[in-house]
Length: 88
Image 1 (cartoon, helix red, strand yellow):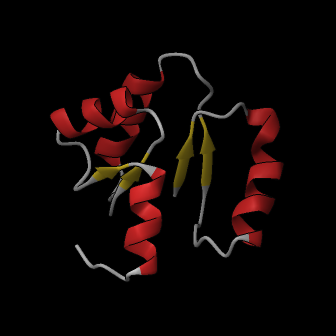
Image 2: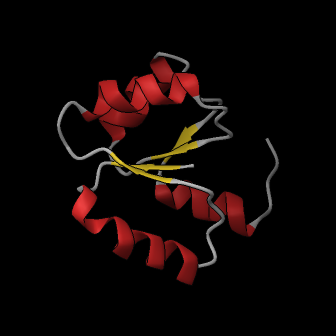
């Protein structure tokens, strides 16, 4: 599952981008920007999350502080992990 703060009107465009970049996902959830930290945290706690990627450091820090995902990382960190096939 991919969880994003993008507006729902961008869902199809985001799905096409993910597929075009061969990013594996089974579901895309577009939350929108309102109360995103709390909404993401709530969904992360329910999901079986392997890792959490967010470009906003305040959101990553919030998720790490609440232990909602095994590892919250920036997009740059994720690219490095993906390219180097690091396993958590």
